[in-house]
Image 1: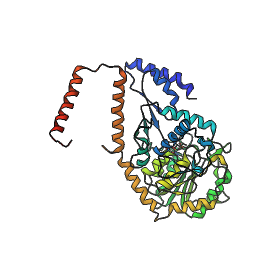
Image 2: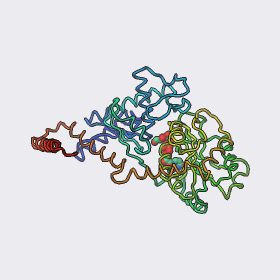
Image 3: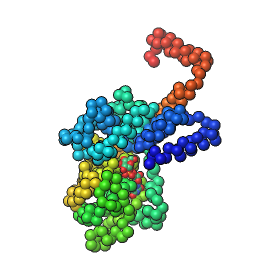
Image 4: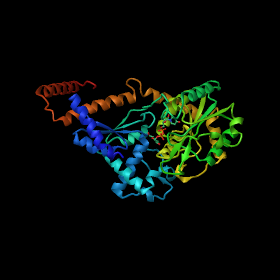
Length: 421
Ligand SMILES: O=c1ccn([C@@H]2O[C@H](COP(=O)(O)OP(=O)(O)O[C@H]3O[C@H](CO)[C@@H](O)[C@H](O)[C@H]3O)[C@@H](O)[C@H]2O)c(=O)[nH]1
């Protein structure tokens, strides 16, 4: 699909260059669009990657590719219980290795993409230094890894519906009014990303768990289409009453709401939300941190099992419902397991709540003037300029050389005089 877009991108970029008379400073490519590297080369421009997941996962991906290319390591054949990964303080249990890495065909594409990362001038990562310092450290200092810029959190906090048909304004208003009436931090919010859905049997288990836990809830529920698959598709349940246990809606009318697509960011920002049961997509993870809402993990597809492991074990800011669930397994998680996770999430004196608050401060602080992510963005812009100049074939003038030499001599003189510089 991405290949088929190349002619359009070529055409659009050429038209823009002809219109503006500008020269290209570079391409910033989504992490799945590395086949566009060829196009950037055609235009004589450097490429950068925008990596939409975390730094630990980026390190994992690079590690798997490197071990494959240099040592013939085939992760699809990996049988041990755990795999050492340089971006994490502890080994990754095999059960949380994302499915895309365990399937030969998918692994092949992923390895090609990862190899391409190394051909770029830099990788922007939607993360924060104070959140993933260990992983970021492991990405610096050579190893044929381009410069990594932690520039996050980059969020869309408006909570717009995915498409106009998926969440009507009036439904959203009703949900917000209901949230307004709930006590502070009393509501468990369940939402599973753009492709997370459940079959009727699983819906019943979740419903029983919610009732059993006795907690208030807001549940964004979608139907899993076409059975278990590596990349699931979902639709809205027409009438949720048809899949919920009999009488559930009436019994929970005061304490809960079941909706389709949720205005997630707006919900997470609400004072009555006390916990977030999430599929651990990276955007959801960052949004939860931004609003300081503790999480319970229920990964489903993509790299979410890895993220769940990071949240539960490395960062200790999430309760575990599941860490290794995969949509394609068709497994049904029992009401007991879900209820246990929800109870632990909503527990008043849970230490992970304090920890999540600390991360909330760190994540917000990173965007302040001069703080880590702001500095990274500034550095990225400076590097774009440097790369632009060095690839432009521009002649450096005598004046520029003189100016540079003069400051160098001044520095040398200060050093001679024993200045502490
Ligand atoms: O009912 C919903 C469901 C989702 N969202 C929003 O949609 C986004 C979902 O993003 P994310 O949490 O990253 O999940 P996915 O949509 O599943 O994202 C894919 O891309 C991410 C990286 O960008 C990966 O981390 C995930 O594993 C992969 O599935 C977030 O902004 C949510 O606020 C809503 O507003 N309402």
